[in-house]
Amino acid sequence: MQRYIIKRFFQSLIVILGISVIVFIITHLTGDPTDLLLPPEAGPEEKELLRNQLGLDRPIYVQYLGFLKNIAHGDFGQSFRHQTSAFSLIIGALPATIELTIAAMILSIVIALPVGIISAIRPRSNYDRLGMTFALLGQSIPVYWAGLMLILLFAVTLGWLPSTGRGGIKHLILPAITLGLFSTAAIARFTRSSMLDVLDTDYVRTARIKGLTEYIVVLKHAFKNASIPVLTMTSLQFGRMLSGAVITETIFSWPGVGRMAVQAIYNRDFPVVQTAVFVTSVIFVGINFLVDIIYTYLDPRIKYK
Amino acid sequence: MNGNEKVLDVRNLKTHFFTNLGVVKAVDGVSFYLRKGQALGIVGESGSGKSVTSLSILQLVPKPAGRIVEGEIWYGEEDLVKKSQKEMRQYRGKKLFMISQDPMTSLNPVFKIGNQIAEAIRRRQNLTGDDLTEKIIEMLKLVHIREPETRINSYPHQFSGGMKQRAMISMALACQPEILIADEPTTALDVTIQAQILKLMMEIRQHYNTSIILITHDLGVIAKFCDYVLVMYAGKIVERADVKTLFKGNRHPYTRGLINSLPHLGKKQQRLASIKGQPPDLLNLPKGCPFEPRCDYSVERCSCDYPPIEPVDKEHFISCWRWREI
Image (cartoon, rainbow over all chains, first blue to last red; front, side, top):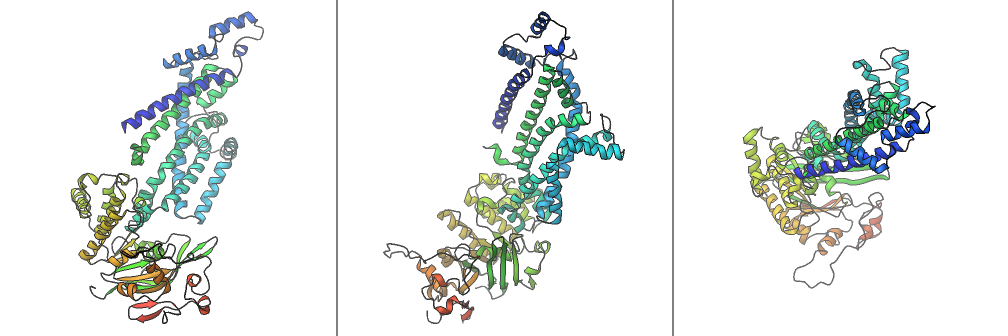
């Protein structure tokens, strides 16, 4: 058990190191930030000076090692645009993103699990058909379109909910639905197929042979087994939500990491982009690590592998 | 035999599967009864309807494809076919229990063995805490599992195949069913373990006067443990008789083929005898006797009409046009 966790922990560290390389290289491929930071009339000498100040004239691997050394100290550099620490900018925006992601996740799980389970218990029933049609729609509709349609209906036409900004629960509803739509559909479909597989197994039949109630058969014997792949799927959805937040946050002007990252990309504000991608990736890796630990509680066989 | 009371009376049972390719008549007009304390064997090749017959008794035919389309299964004064799934709960785990073919997959991998046995115990006795733990340990001891105090907390993957099947039997013991169905309980186990498992089942039978339905394709097992035998072929019973008659006085060419294909001790044999041909395609059964294409005794009539089941004597029934001549 302990070995399993330690092994997973080091695997996570390697993944984070990989992310740091990719993040570092990709942002450098987008162009020269000094073009944006200096006034257009600035001469080549001034440009060179700024490149030197920012360390952009050094070889790329030196820049990377410097970057790695700095992030190890929690220093992600200064934002080119805002003249403050990039890390504090992202950390400041993080609560908004986490709030939105968790709201969307809770919404997805609360809707998807019952829909998936009931569809699996009554396959090919009208309930199943209805649920799976909505799931198919949920997975097919693009996020930006769904977001705009929700704004059009609930904010513009009906005027029930605000369309932009962060505030109370009311502000959270539309962005959370938009962000959670795809995941709800995906988790529901996955729960259904996973439950269908499990309901067909010998051990579920054994549970029935014992004369246990349908409630125990489905929720204890079947669901605990079915929840293992569903958990994998859900943790992947978490990653999708963290990245999907970019679009949702932009549509709803939600002051989170995603929107900040988009603005930073427009401004070629390398340190902010790097921090945003890095921090979200680390959160995702962290969630996967947690999920790996949860597995051992759901499936005792994992501990001994 | 311990008395003549019928505990189960199956009449003209038809369980069909409605698939995209057509209707599979897995069980097609099967009638038999089981007496108190009797050990009834069902033999036949794969796909002959043995397992579906037992699942039909428990009303656990895989849905939505499978359905009992006709027939009655009388348990005492009640017809189980008419029971809802909810009503069947009163029978499963109390009156009826089934040990299935593959012990590897019949236990839930994510729950402790003790927990799974406890579920069976609690169907009969409302025990909790230490009393329950004690009872589980007692059950594990009865099926000869060593160190039951620690094994109670094991997961199925920490058990061997034989231990898993014994755990299943301990559930059967806890439920104390009136009828225990064992669907090829030893197929997945090696020979030495087979004997132990069968011995355990017979102990249950003697101890509690449980009626047993033993499904197998091993005639040796039938000869040793059963009183009465059904021979099934393509969803129908072709011959049923007490075990002695079946081995010595069988009249159906298929039964004869099965018995001839047994190896004989002390007899020099180059090759084992076998029944020529293949079991029939259940989607495409011939109009007449399904065994006709493989039968050495077939006449024209066999391929046109299905032979009715006729009594040879009080306990011996047969479905063959030519049984009088064979």
